[in-house]
Image 1 (cartoon, chains in turn brown, red):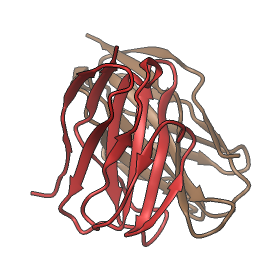
Image 2: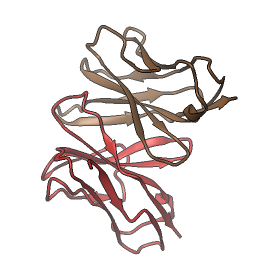
Image 3: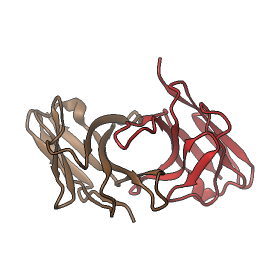
Image 4: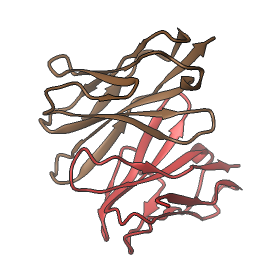
Length: 118
Length: 114
């Protein structure tokens, strides 16, 4: 069964420092997509970054980068130069095909709460 | 403006009283999905739909029903709500052309079942 594991319930980071949020995944599929979402205290879900299982290069989007290690099944989010507005819950998610084939299922981790300290 | 809308945003109800949470998207997306978010459990997929009349169970489908009669709408039905269905519910949509298709989320519906 598909599974996403986020082992850091809460993290603190000093403003302007970099921080890494961990994510490991489990799937028997060869094709899958990995996503990170941000959920600020206002509650909306904001897409941050995507990595495909066949992508050889790590994805980057501005201050966000995804450290993808396929053999280890990890997809850690790196936020560089943290800002106060980065304080939020962060969710790792995976999209892959169900056993029946052709159906796309999405699995989320339990999230990591990041707090940026001035 | 591209968006996913959910109604109602907040709902307090009593055990056993049937309710429907509506979800609508204006992006012509094929894929739509419902999630529930609970503290310490993250988001869990309830049901999803690959297209009109094509739905499948997610990880926590018990106690919920869905239908997809039109491409833009994907209502979530609780036939006999119970207190353990008190949660924050999100609807999301995306294209279904590939695994990289990003989901767009609605604003959420906070449901309390007494």
